[in-house]
Image 1 (spheres, rainbow, N blue to C red):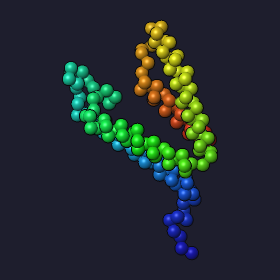
Image 2 (cartoon, helix red, strand yellow; image 1 turned 135 degrees about the vertical axis):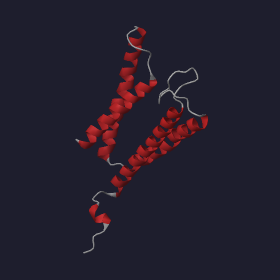
Image 3 (tube, rainbow, N blue to C red; image 1 turned 180 degrees about the vertical axis):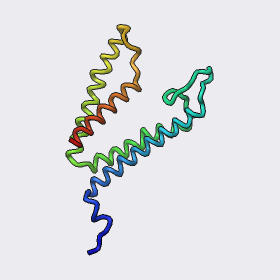
Image 4 (cartoon, helix red, strand yellow; image 1 turned 90 degrees about the horizontal axis):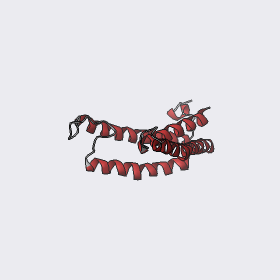
Length: 147
């Protein structure tokens, strides 16, 4: 009996496509993060002498456009394909994560906004809301998928 590499891979084609698409998204995010980190390292100080960071360093216009196209066009295309290959269990896990993320915005943003208006918190920051949504959505997705 001849053993082929596929004999050891018990995953189906849908699951392999799922993992491949997730890896592509991870690589895309890593490339974007690396590009912004390189720009930040090259510009240690802003024009006013203030120290710059990964989140605030100005990007060259061409790089900003490339990242915007990757994030706004390529990523949705990959996501569309991912939704076509996942099974119902993963789709439900994703849906539950998305609902949790929705509640972060639907509840968290107004709470933060009211507390800012009361002088108790800094102004609402869209980046940190994004981080909160993605973190909670990802945690719920992983919990539902792997438990």
